[in-house]
Image (cartoon, rainbow, N blue to C red; front, side, top):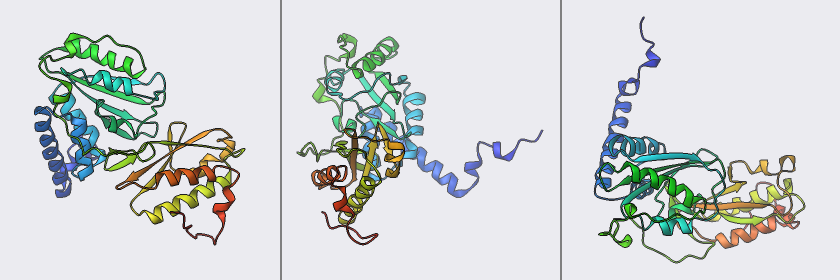
Length: 314
């Protein structure tokens, strides 16, 4: 029987554009391979590459599989989170001491977005916290010692215990006595001081601020509150071209904030989270102030002016 053309796995290579795109992907992946062999954490490498635009988000999953699974044979454990996670400070402190191990995390949030995380890099955690129950986390671990499967499996289990806030006994097999944590090969951007509201962290191709909570003080986050937030966002984006405002509720990214008032979903006392993405993030504290007012009974002040007019707030 003649094979259906649509089933041909090499169709992508049948055009020059497809061939060149595939060839470029493999060349890029091989360059990452050499950096991993030099001791760099792949999550740091990919975050840097995304920021430079040399790799796109849809390439992350193939790169992880090709390098960590097929080439370097990292031990892996995946888990739909059994509970929500608010803080990872203790985890970062503990895992930073595991100098015998290289750890890379692949995290899928409830919207299906993939983030690649170096668990010892606090900046990688800021855009994804808090973690919601049932979201998917995949832990890739490789020991510097050859064929040390037992240690890698143990470390995978210990990682998830730490993630859930449990105490884990430090094992000698996790620690290289000849390497201090500060001597690990790392790729870091220059450190800068930020307030809690202004803290930013690199993720994918942009920087993203930490998620900031705004409490709803109106009896209900209704249509008026939504329209006020739309006006505030439009003013912010008009003043700061290139910056985007992301809205989060109940652990999920909200692509259409109109859904927040449907069926009386968001009530008095409920927090809504927001973050800002882009370069040179600014005025986050002022944005928080306006969002708080817009989520209160004073939302009408933002509805003044002609239809489709942009408020001068920032």
